[in-house]
Length: 237
Image 1 (cartoon, helix red, strand yellow):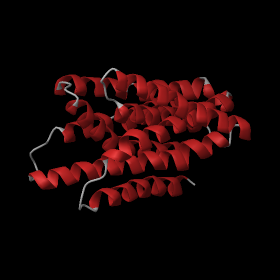
Image 2 (cartoon, rainbow, N blue to C red):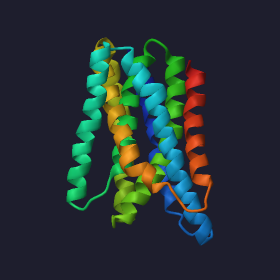
Image 3 (spheres, one colour):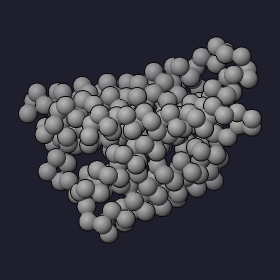
Image 4 (spheres, rainbow, N blue to C red):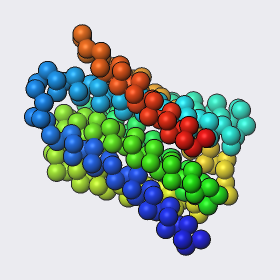
């Protein structure tokens, strides 16, 4: 058990470490000409959106649905969307932003829980899942950093926050292994709740920020992001 727990903590920690790496990449604002920087940024937002959508379609909803009855699946999915609609409206009414950060956490935490729950029974799948989470977290960390920076947050404080967020991975994996391993229904409900929240945030806040006049790279970025998730899903399946 101790060895399995150590593996779960290490895998989840490495998967989360790409969040601050993505944020560090986002600090390099002057590496590209202005016009290319703008298109590149929109492309990364779209790539992250595609990766989030792949997490919904290929991990959170299928895995959650396998653990619950159909009515419960629909309830928790809709409940997640409704809850984060309320949260998003409350944040907007106070003049704040945070859709990218919320979506990143909604993706990272339940997937890390699932990683912990899976590692005891199938460590090979858990390793592949950790790699997929790490690849998803890179553009999501980039996008969340830029969003918070645009809102006036200080770079150093954002980076410190993102380093602290890495710790949520091992904590979630521990919770998944020790608590949710024997409670598949609870894990399924968490995954579906997160999926509903991510889908709401994608269409309300993230996808509208992707569009750029006379530029075709951003929508292709969304395709590439989903393809990344699909590749990981095919490797795990």
